Image (cartoon, rainbow, N blue to C red; front, side, top):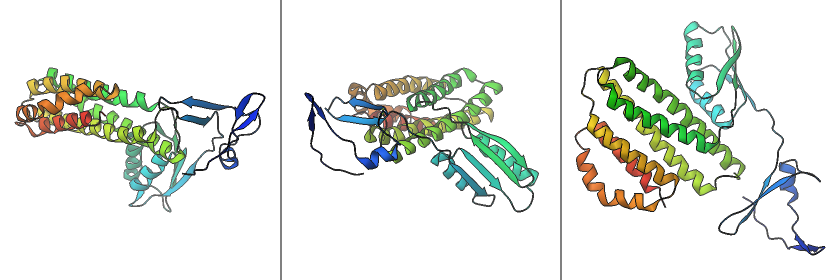
Length: 287
């Protein structure tokens, strides 16, 4: 991060401040370019480039034992086109593995392939972070609500398990956007502290989804679903989510006061206890 002090200039009764040449060059700004100004509640004046030249990012990966790790790296870096190559033809099992990775990440699609090359396109949708987080919450909230209705409904239990895949896709997509915002050092909607807190917030939601999936899997194996506990957790989860999104300190205070009572209440089932702890963690982020 660069820092410098500049003096205001007076011209025609107004005050002017010149922009750093390095910043203007970075975002391809010239005479007549638009910039957006934001005045924060704390009095900060933030300047954002109104538009910047977007260059397509491409990457070529060799298919080897590090493929999954390298694929995740390029996805999180925001690569637009990822080409996977192999010196000998892909086997059917290898093609299925690559297809499974693509399926489990949001907005990826295989657009071209031959015997030794598979091209993957990232169809970026520019869904705002807040919308993705809201989607994660609603997916996990409906997983809770449907667990209470499922009983021995095999199809519903399987649907709940499948829903967790979409939660994971949204989770990775939010991380990608947060990384992009932290890398460029600016974002119109979030400051750096909010982005770091959001990273912790979505991690809790994603882990709640994982535990709900485990409860659904146990239901498929014949175990009793703890309906009463999940109903209570669903209500607490809604309170915690709204408290965090609206910065309602009273919600955090309620959980602090009731924490021992809730811990005791939800201690009989490991997954239920884990879900409560992640809900409590969300309220700890309210400041």
